Figure 1 (tube, rainbow, N blue to C red):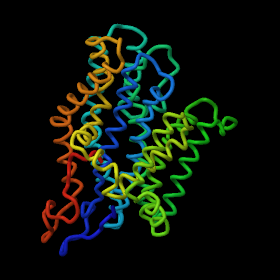
Figure 2: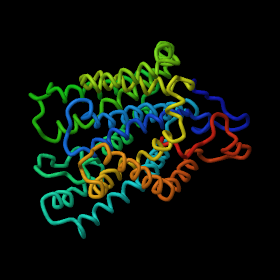
Figure 3: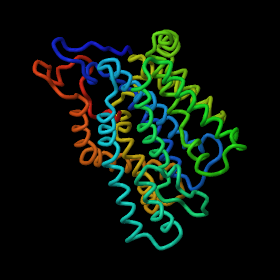
Figure 4: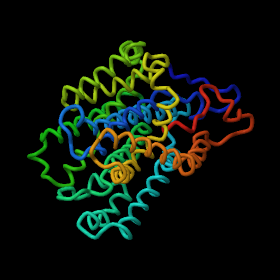
Length: 383
């Protein structure tokens, strides 16, 4: 799939004109959320491939890094800049309403329903970190009890990416500067995880901040830069924009999970899968990833991610723990059902407002938003 940049004659460029559209990425979100629900449905961390559920978070990161960077680069090409305020407003409308609703529900449950104890006290003492998306920096995790709302670490990492990456793309023109910055961040994360900075950083805030950057989100961003840069677009597309590339990349991701590859090659395989599913519209996995049910699960996956932990807990009381597979099946259906409701009544109204922000101010002679070139605006996309 090529990224079109034509605009309507007689109108000024807007970030919405011929905006990149990657429908298969919703299907990848479905593939990402299911292992996470499975992970929460098992009584303990399992060995082998059945214990690889947390890799679903990494796939989410790779999708996000690629998609957000592609959209920002498209905006810069079509308008000449990245409108930071409008970007952050759109992200806030996408992320904040459901997040703070769920966080508020957890707080009410802890205050009025949860039995007193260290887990409750730890959560209530950490609410400020969850509310400010800094739990991955400041949360005290060395505890011997379950951490309530622990899944928020990944959302904090995403929000920090949304805060810091757009100004880089605004200030550094071309592809080389942003690519160097993102490569440095990936190298910093890899070095921190491998203990390269042990002599410089103790086990404190600086090291936690260095580790908080997610390598797969950086790799997704680098792929988006490479796919759009004149000097690298051709080889990237020659490798990933073949019909069978998505199938090969998926096989590599499965092999990485089954054979317990190190994380870096696993993340590279995931990034290749994202690129193969985005850069060519008719790739071999498209019929599966763009199936109506699969896409729907991907569309509501944000809600599933936020809600599946308490739903799994409720389903466990209903069906017991004798069969993790049964618990997973029931919890998945219930999580998707509840997330569909929150999508309809919480997320979607704010997404409609977000789309109006995306279109930008109109001038006399502009075409209506639904007449712009490129694919129609689809508020179901979780971009």
